[in-house]
Length: 134
Image 1 (cartoon, rainbow, N blue to C red):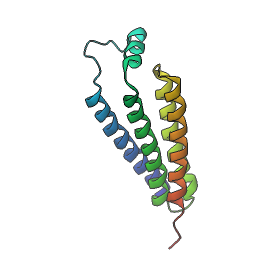
Image 2 (spheres, rainbow, N blue to C red):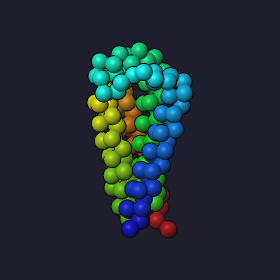
Image 3 (cartoon, one colour):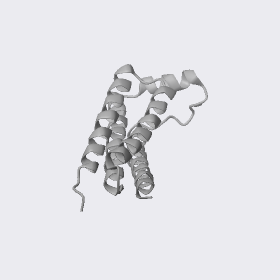
């Protein structure tokens, strides 16, 4: 039961971290009010007009969210801490992959965001699972 609670808590925490960072990005680089997100060409034009800093904020949020997911799941889990951390991190990773391929992001961003999310999520799972049994 602690494993399920750990995964749930980790996913909620990671989602809140990512949402807060997206809100910061939205405040700095707002989406135009007249854009139709169902129109693919308008989405592509908007994402291509964003500066690199907007993409860096998104990549940092995904990396920190993935790290937090692996860390918290590993800390809360009773047994199989590494597995629990990897499950939570993998769920965040899959959601990020879906997000990356839904929009037309630059290739450098897709690669760096994928690498950052995977490495930081794995690091979080390792750190979260490394505590000594009481």
